[in-house]
Length: 171
Image 1 (cartoon, rainbow, N blue to C red):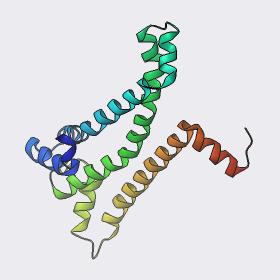
Image 2 (image 1 turned 180 degrees about the vertical axis):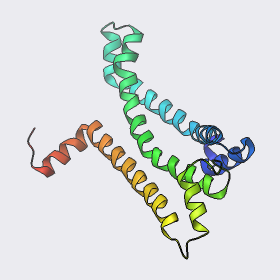
Image 3 (image 1 turned 120 degrees about the vertical axis):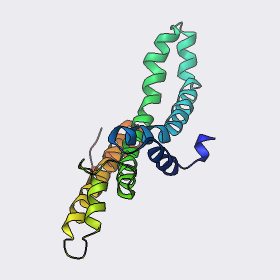
């Protein structure tokens, strides 16, 4: 049921219900995104658990805790970390959007969405007030997307091999 509800709409409702403030904004974003991560971890764990090398480890007599800590958790955690880095840009955009519409951080706190909102009122004669916080949002979101792409390339051996071949580096 939670997965059918758009996270941004849920974050708006939660932020409006909880009130303005940085902690309330973080809580609203965390509650609106947790179902996606619980689903991702569940699917990744089940995928890794059903791999042949897990059966081999069981047959070899490894204890369950060792299989979990050495095989299941590291292999399920990598895609989750890549997704978290990718979603960090979305979380920044959502936090800025919530502050822009007035349900995020309170005005004395410097927050990019709030700065863009305040600069929007004077866009005709002082464009830089809204431009530079918006540019900071853009650069940060693109940076997190590039980080997620680099994490994905380093975590997946097939992609890493392809990238190295394109660069002319032999393994």
